Amino acid sequence: MSSKPQPPLMKKHSQTDLVSRLKTRKILGVGGEDDDGEVHRSKISQMLGNQMRFGVREPIGLRIWILMSAVLFTTIALIALVFPSQLYELVFELRTTRISIRLYGGALLSVSLIMWKGLYTAEKAIIQWTLLTEACLFAVQFLVTTITLVELGLLSNSAIVLLLSEVLFLIITLLYYYHLGRRTKKTQNHTHSSD
Image: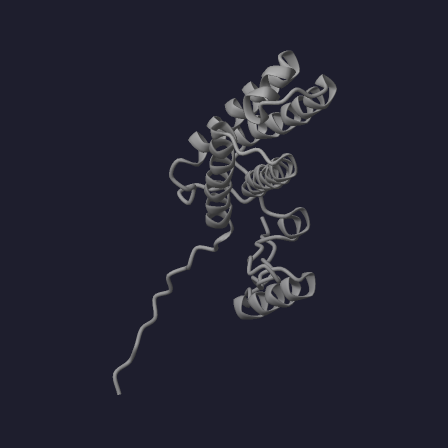
């Protein structure tokens, strides 16, 4: 039996492979920080984007606040749709057409659906848009209510309570929105050498 001589084993040059890998990643544009400060591990995650999940950074009470907002908006929307004249008379102590209050109820019901969706998601961007939608609604309601009360020259107790609650809800919503928009500071371990 004759044994064939084995070809010499090719020695792998790990240093050149590493340089080659780094050059490939640089050409693909992967591995460095993008404009948002994110480091992408692959071209796919860079193209599709990372789903930003909360994990530990979710503000305390955020889910309860979104739940309360969704229930509040849904309840007021249903009252506006079913009993439109009572809702308007409660605040302004005047009568108005039912269609305008029902339109308001329909719009508020649509916003409440956004709130319900925001309650069950874990994506930061969706929750931020949900809070921004809620803040815009409170701001517009405050402006419209204030202008209407000034035009009518009325200032009932229920109108004052409504205005104060709108301002309070707006502030709470904006605080949650601000808290979600903050970046968490990454702690870096630096070794200092003594001279």
